Amino acid sequence: MPFTGSCHCGAIAYTVAEDPPRQAMACNCSICRRKAPLHHFTTPDKFTLHTPREAVATYEFNHHVIQHHFCSNCGVAPFAEGQGPNGPMVEINLRCADGIDLDALHVQLYDGASR
Image (cartoon, rainbow, N blue to C red; front, side, top):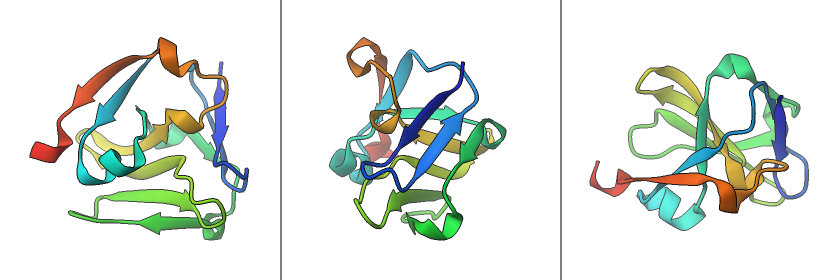
């Protein structure tokens, strides 16, 4: 069963063609400490963006392998894209996903600050 998500104002919206996840990853790197996303990773073929690309703002840092996307209107960052350890990936910020019970997620901690 696919799940959907968006930024706060709804200008950026997406669908992920897989069941809603039951686990997430929390990272302590410099950007995640500030934004506090709960990460879910998927492949580009399962991700459909319903927003024109030119409406999505992007920030890159460090090695410039991940494009951190956010809404230029409300500032919320619902997803990112880039190269993961196994190839192209899409990171979904589960705090922006519809119908996800965040308290029920099994959250795995990742030490991105030490990498």
